[in-house]
Image 1: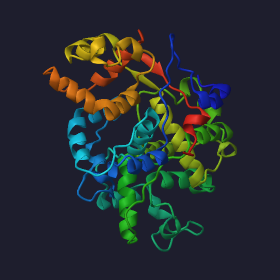
Image 2: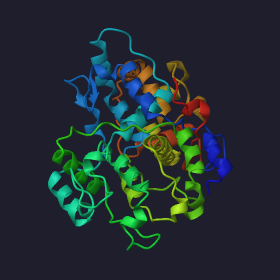
Image 3: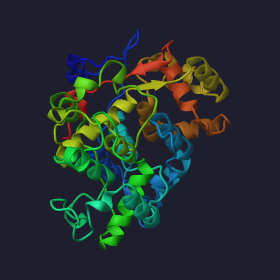
Length: 389
């Protein structure tokens, strides 16, 4: 259960802690990740939704469902030799990467990722009509008095803003009187919302959607309490640690499909408040890493990591020195900062550069971190979750 004290202590979220020495997985902020994407020089070779090199690969196209910190670290590790070769061709020194910017980059990429297919206007048109939206709302002029036309919605940039408008709809009980309390609005999936927005934007001749980045997880945690979300979302209804991981479109659908509650309990949310709340909701999906230490030990030996990390003369840190301080973000920082020397070492020993698939990195970090458990917890503190740099 996420108690109120533990939630504002989600400023020090350790309610999922396990025994042993705990090394917290730092929580990133998407806005800082956007800045790190530039300061680390990623823009020289890559782009994200058009931000960066026009000749580079859009990194979001390389992100698949199930994107997690360990998958990001594995992807960076697998491509590291090619990355260094490209960096050598660019002028200037390669900036140092620490776990915090690595976390920021992860949350930046995750926040912009859509696992739905590209939206289509035709199914969006069908949804707008079949769900009776068109009975009240017209595109330019509405048939129902008091119902603003779509042109005046100002929420078509992102599905989560559309869901926010419906959540804060003060005339909801008058508009849909046939729905009893705690029943759903006409249900929409993340894909449905994507299609509907494409239809509405195209019908009004508006530009494509703007990027929506979540705000500070700490501010979002406070809103979660102050807005009354915590009143219902505790115990079995608690949100943290659930196995399903939502993108922002998924959160928008969940908010849209949220059971109706008594009007007195509905706290209207501004777009900025929802942005902060989204930061909290995204972050609590990654409060722990799960891996199999025994399998990680097998990988450590099979990938020939022992050749350097268990041989003092090689100068590489020993496994015991890494215990308690090796998460996926640490692994990403390690390969970025020390990888060229590691690559040279593997070549001298005639060892192939290790390649990681599926859950390999999660298992390896579980072993290196030193836990005998399969779960490691994370925390958010004002220091590592502040939006300032």
